[in-house]
Amino acid sequence: MNILFLLAIATAPGVAIALYIYLKDKHEREPIGLLIRAFLYGMLSTLLTLVISMPISSVVPIEEHNIGEQAIHAFLLVALIEEFSKFVFVRGVLYRNKNFNEPFDGIVYSVMVGMGFATFENILYVSDGGVSTAFLRMFTAVPAHASFAVLMGYFLGKAKFEHKKGYYSIYALGVATLFHGAYDYFWFIAYVPGIWFGAIASLGIAIYFSRKAIKIHQDESPFHPDAMPPFQNEVENSAEKVKPDDSSSKENSIS
Image 1 (cartoon, rainbow, N blue to C red):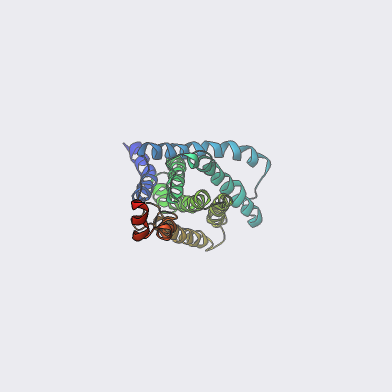
Image 2: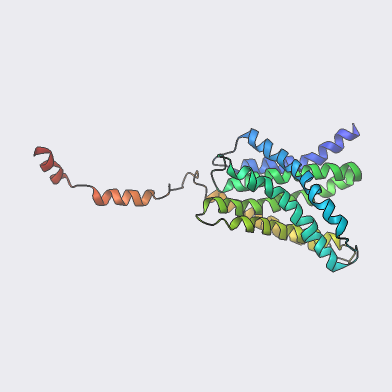
């Protein structure tokens, strides 16, 4: 029973956040089956992270109390590798799916992959650390992964639907890595008195920008009730310009 309880509190945060983002997709929701697949891709991305990071870690030793080396650890050996592992599945697989048909879908699929990653990671940590670890990560690590995913998805949505703006894909990986690295870095050097507050501050900033990103893509959805189809104004104006007057139409019909 205790194992089932630990499993429940380890998986609950990721599933809850995934459901929250699903409900935020107000105008044109994604197929449930595809979202579950994206969540599983996220779990698979943890294995890709291990495949990449283990050989690198074996040849790049990090001194625990060296602040400079811990920056390399946080930003490159952890954040970049983890975010790249998620990015591979979002940009390489889900990005091409026909259901990815509005900017907000970038956020949806990124969060599903991110929550799959965070949930699998959470299960590993909680199985070792117990209930206290589960509740700590419920309010820190899992929301952090969600905010990184939202920021990545925001830029992937822009990359796909803004003409010739593919470089936003680089921004997607870069911004997620930046916030992830900052969050981890302050935890890694938590032996410095009070420095852990930097992790909480970076998480708060990431959540703030994530909320703004969600609102922007919600409002920009082509499925929004107030959205005007592209070029509709131009088409209507053109139609008005070429519309024949009634008298000329009658003359042509008589002749």
